[in-house]
Length: 210
Image (cartoon, rainbow, N blue to C red; front, side, top):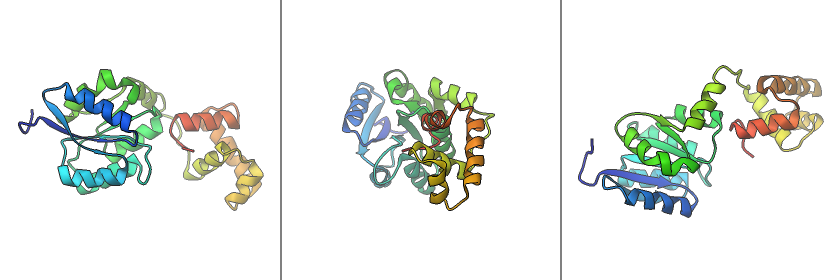
């Protein structure tokens, strides 16, 4: 159901102008939708949302000034009816879960844009939810996993930065023994072979970002 003669009004948010142009080009081929505004970061997204009140917002996650996740929280805080589709290169289940919990209605990967984006825009506009098949698989695969505690996430981030246990302990003002225990717990929860493997899994699943 289209609310006005202009069709589905879309705000695209991405710090890469090529992505914004690509989306605009794709949308331009559709008689029932149009891009009404663009933004290159989360703060600008909130400003443009207030001005245009789009039907659908396409949101990247990794952006300067204000991340896509923070922008989703900010927009939904002011406009609970906002319909936001995350459009990202990250298929990590933790990242997806955060975005969906923050109120995103769909989570799509940029490499699936041609196939899935237009369908997702119409689905979300009609009140449904939509997620890339790969992301749905990731979410299901890790649904019963033990989540890392905030302290373990901090340790994992420092492991990914290449720090040894002693350095991590000093950085977090804790003991070597505590860090050693946390590292063991991280390896177990992530089913990781070693510290490097744990860091790779953490990055892939969106538990940490560097």
